[in-house]
Image 1: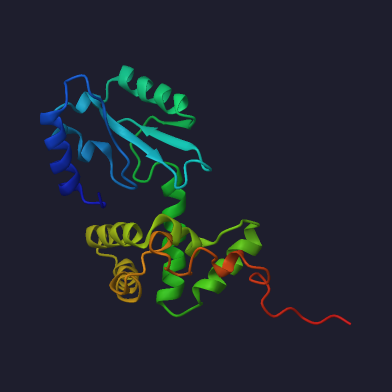
Image 2 (image 1 turned 60 degrees about the vertical axis):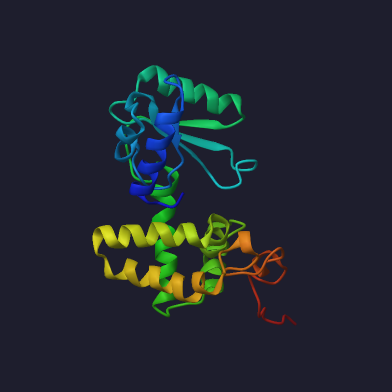
Length: 215
């Protein structure tokens, strides 16, 4: 489901009517709070967030976030469940849009989009800068492809509408016009800011495409 509180509430409402009373519901929403959805499930005390990073077989962090009505025992049950399936559980004791991971990541990706949407630099040069400076194997635009450009658009557009921020609106429009409308959704479709399965940022020479010849 996209980052739409109304849609999530509708789906959890339907699930609440279908599932046994003992069922625990979790949302994997990237930026929404569980308290925005919990009452729609009909069992807010058994509702919380369980957020996985992308490629959980490599990045096995699970953020478990309670809301004020979450039963403490249910919170502990989900923490134990996360550990049983091989995740490293991160306890989020207080609601925070974006948990820990996306509180850090979303502003970075938004800043990268701003640089490109405003014509300051290319996606490749933004990634090149970040990869060299931070000594990481992937830059913001490689990360956006991994997350999925539809997801990135949904998050950007939702918060642009909520805050009225003109730059966020411009960033959302940029994603839609140049990528979504052309069927380029990132890794899932084989093309986004890069072409897959062999994106250029993984190829030799990407970090220094014009090396200075040395005598």
